[in-house]
Length: 285
Image (cartoon, rainbow, N blue to C red):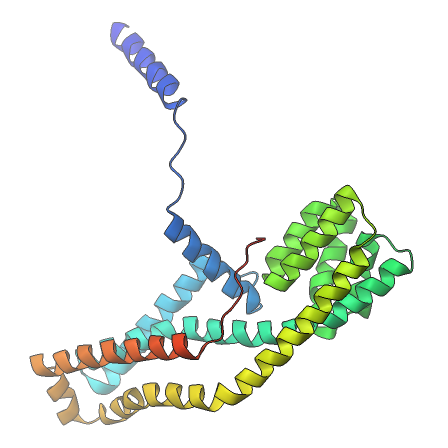
């Protein structure tokens, strides 16, 4: 009994002591990477895919590619290099899809804002005006506002539905519009339509500038991507020959593959950094 009483007393003291300490927050860097990947998946339209599931897709594709490459080339070094590259390909696809879809959606916000202004001036409430975009808004934005209308009918919680809408769209322009609507709903005001009209004009000017810059640099970026991928395509074709597989399975061959992978990765990252236009961060997340 004395032992049990001592254990219970010790557990109580540990509990009391731990109550005075807050749990350590998640590392800022890991949280930032988590938020960025979650935004990329949402911007690519993959709202229902979790980060763990996406990681599983990358690992599974990499292992499958490694097995197929090993069976075709019989070279462990070449199979490992191709498996790593193809395992990372879902991340490149998500980034490409997210940028393409975000550019498409950015061009639709001025039209959506004009529809919203018309609804507000017609005397509709903010929830009704937003829900109406499910029928009157631009085609690509209608699914977001259809979900908003369903959430609002189910819960009646306007702020919660706005947060869900922001999470699904994951766009800085949408964040500004939604926060303006939230503030107006909470504190009132008569300048909402003027604010939205100014924001729509700003978005149009920014969109026109970006389209001009993208048109000028698109061929350069495409050529750089092809130049990065070309050596690995040639390697995949040559690796079916027995002599090539044996050459790259030697220590010098492994060193050449590793150096080539590092240089290709560094060149791709540098090309993306230099060729990408500045993107707005989501400060109103």
